[in-house]
Image (cartoon, rainbow, N blue to C red; front, side):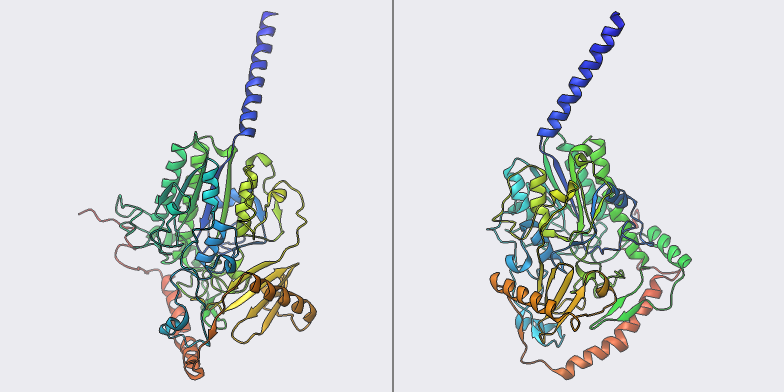
Length: 528
């Protein structure tokens, strides 16, 4: 009888302890881990369809998350998209419409592009009057941390000037100074050992922050420089993927001509594959830190990218097929992204939704999930996705807008876009022509259906122009020095010289004896 009483007493104490624990977890604010990858294409993950790149850690995270299969970046290039995440505003509204550092106006002529228009001016730093998502978290008692790529302004507009208590590696540049292996040249990230990998270092710094602040409430923003150029990897990872490409069969050609530049058609770049794998390894480091510190059950994890994969321009690193285009382009390949949100206590894992969402939605969503007051006057272009994360419908039919009054380094054209009710209209500023696509099917096949649906196009165009006027959008202007003859020379040079050069370089990188330099971008360390 005494033994039975003792067992009942122990069981009662355990139940009481668990109930109190659940009550504490229920009432405490969740931690937030935001992982932003640079230039990662929608199909650059195993979970989203790549059979070449290997991303087991991210794939596992996605299976534990709600996967938004129509998730979009707010811009086709980095700085505007990142500003939209920070502010909850579309690019034309906050004013950062191109990557910070891009030339505008008459300065554009120094690029010798011979384009018809001069790109519009844009805001050069994250506006101080905006309350960033980090500042909102900070105001609610969160310890805020930033690691990696910033590219939203220089001195006076660094992460620590916009709500982050700690800044590791966030400066004005968009690509890593000195590359992906130490020694690098980043005033916000001291070198510690030669040959150290930048991506792994940022992950380890984030993991260390998590461990040190496991007893507080934190907002950690891990913003990888990867997989942005320069694309670099170790010899072992290059060889692994070179052999994998060889086993799959190396085609003689890997590009076709888009409107302005050649565009990659196949995922077989072993250097880029190694860069992607290292980024995935780094994600694994941070997720393990959550596990080791018993924070998994009370930590929201967001994973996404700032724009599409680089298929043209820069290092022509990946293919986004069947999506058209890539980073810098106005089509789906430039803006459609992996978009995962893990909310452990909702117990809805591995679900998918095709509701169209965008980077501006993350600000109000995270506030809502943390039971914090929304800042509707700030995140005016975002909505909370909490109902979708809870498994409910979201009966809001809203337009999404993109505005890029610039020429992309990757072949994109000055244009503005509206997407609504499964239709996407693109307005081109060079000559005013428009394209209409039914998402997702017709754009994959480059099938412009505007002639068959002129009434839909007219309505979307009217909505787009009204919105651009309401947000005081800036536009490109005619270049009075434009030369059709010089433009044609450039086009022919691209076809006759650039394209063959790309094909040759692709095969060189896939050759058995490829070696970029003696120390593989400083990843090989020689002891003197």
